[in-house]
Length: 472
Image (cartoon, rainbow, N blue to C red; front, side, top):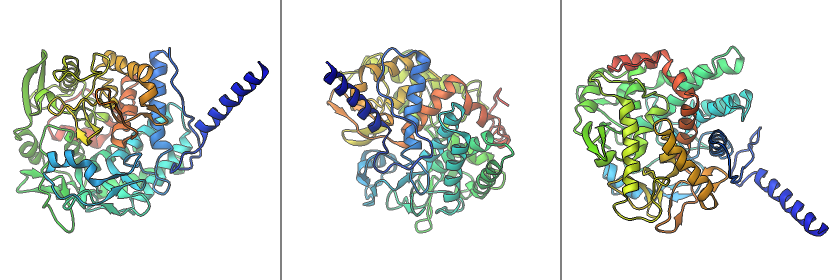
């Protein structure tokens, strides 16, 4: 009995040490966030806190050690891993042979990570001092990194700040990813606006990047197009305008908010509102879908990236379109499709739902009802928490309590899984992890919404584009 007790005690001790130990390729943190295993019977508040905190570890412990930026993903892949998504979106048949490994950092994912650091500071998982040190590390690095008229690339090397091309023509500025980065930095500027030397220094660094970003450089053809990409070698040859409706609404809002290099409203009207993909107004499963040309609304990240900072509640455009209706109905349609499960995939249910872009057994795929491979991305349901709190909580509890042995890890839930194909990802992606932390927090306290919506430049940009909101 004594020997068994000693063995049990030793096992628990070794287990605790292993969860606290630094994993390979992790950054050395001045403050540690321990790994939590699955513990059933948590209250809703405890479960949300557990999921947020463990997911945040991706940005805190797995950040790049030199830049402090968010790594693009937690495992190495070749560029052709993105084949399905790139071919569908950009018709780019000749991808570069780049490897997205431990040094590949995501510019947009870093913006999401910055917002997560704000959540972690507010919830006291880390100290204000530690948060400022990390944010200054990121800002100092980016002020010396590659940018093109102040606009950053999609991916960069976390050691050197040099651009990692995404494809033959995508080897320069990425306007959309930069808008996510600036959304994060502007929230940080609003949150850390005290009188300490570090806060003042961070504000100075953020303003240098914000003021340098030339959004208007990406307008073409008399304000009829806003171009996603530009590079010194290829110019605008990528030829991919930022048409609506998709995840890039925030790009127009941030671009219109700039003090020194704003876009005109005309480019928003011509390239977004007049796009054939802007309006929908069809009914699916009893829910009206105001925007978007995808049947059933497309992948759910459309309703998450922009609205990490922009509060859709009581937000309307000049035509009276209601963004609270858009975000909620798109989510409910996506869930209803999974419940209906027309392809009869194993595992789909009212508790197990959520189709969005992410990893699958075929590579990176923009999952949605039109492209349904039987793969669930946990971020889809969890990051919809502000729109469907009851339904998202039900999914969270199912993922954690009933699937946790297969999909719960040191950085929260893995990126995707398919019971039908008996496939469970080992990967985590910055652009999927960030919305989980931020959108759960927006549901709980509205923290990021309140910060971003009170920024004077953002209010100016919203008004310029014809939006009305009760948030001042």
